Image (cartoon, rainbow over all chains, first blue to last red; front, top):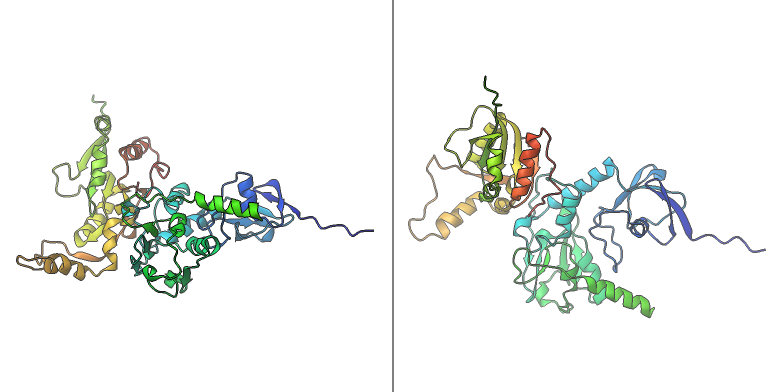
Amino acid sequence: MTAPTRSHIKTLKIDGKDYSGHEEETILDIARQNDLFLPTLCQIDGLSVAGACRLCLVEVKTWNNRLVPACTTHVEEGIEVLTHSERIDNYRRMILELLFSEGNHVCAVCVSNGNCELQALAQKLGMDHVRFPNLRPVRVVDMTHDRFVLDRNRCVLCARCVRVCDEIEGAHTWDITGRGIDARIISDLDTPWGSSDTCTRCGKCVNIYPVGALVEKGSAIGEMVKHHDFLEYIAEMREARE
Amino acid sequence: MSEQKTKVTVATVWLDGCSGCHMSLIDMDERLIELAQYIDVVYSPLVDRKDYPEAVDVALVEGAISSSEDLEKIKKIRAHTKILIALGDCAVAANVPSIRNIFKASDILSRGYLENVTAQPQLPNDPTIPTLLPVVRPIHEIVPVDVFVQGCPPSADTIYTVITELLAGRMPVVTELTRPGA
């Protein structure tokens, strides 16, 4: 007699409805497969999961109503997940406001105005103003690269640049140093981007960044349109090769 | 007997902004004529009245709070207004004027009036000239705001919706129509 095999398929409830998913899939995966909207900023298909922005947080009723990020939480048998409630929506807006309250997010004079994921989320989640005073951290702009600019004042620390450079380009030019409000993006060992030995000038970080922190030199307000279809293509090709 | 209803009194205010929001207001074009049946603009850069009236129903305030004069004005406006609307990104989020916040006000003055000046460099010192506040703030950090209308500037359609919703007795929600930087 063989022992019963453990099922890899888990059944869970999202917003009161039954869904199922493979145990290696996350709550976000299942939500996306079923066209349930969850806001995301740091997550992007084709890169590893960071769980940095916390915008996709959901409430798990069966875990004492704990709030967990949907992108990093794997599905489990019998869990009951809530994607929207007054509490969750309020926290999501608060996360956005905290992002806006740190650094310069003046959309009117940003090269990414109209093509910015942070700005679009603010509108989608109904953020009509920021309740917290701006902390005005002093952050250095790196213009040493001949093609690109890093404006740390507009950075939201999503770490998309770090991941795409490491996982797709294989260069690992970017890292994050410091903690809390002192956290910032650095190239190589905190040396100017323009003098980097590892940067291949591929521009993947620029195109994948959700806001106007990494941009092409010479773009004017609203001109910086990002193209990240390359990521989907590369991820697909890699999968096919495996 | 006269059946004429009393009109809603409206003030429009220009603090530290570029007047773009007022341009957008005027951009309502012929709808202004329609609105004129229901509203009476009692105080505005567009009408010749110097002091803020005792009682105003609705104030559309453009601009951030950057100077001692802005600060004094916004407190007075709040005290004499039923519904205060923060109009545009400067009023809502301090926007472009707040970019100076990473510098000291004294450094900004000396940059503008001493360092970059060849003829008679001097700091403004006339008591009638408002002083710069150390930090530029959005309106809601000084006084309570009833309606936030983002945009740089908010479109004429957005402003029209705000006014007509208020006239219909509803508090306008316009986040779907506008966004920061719109």
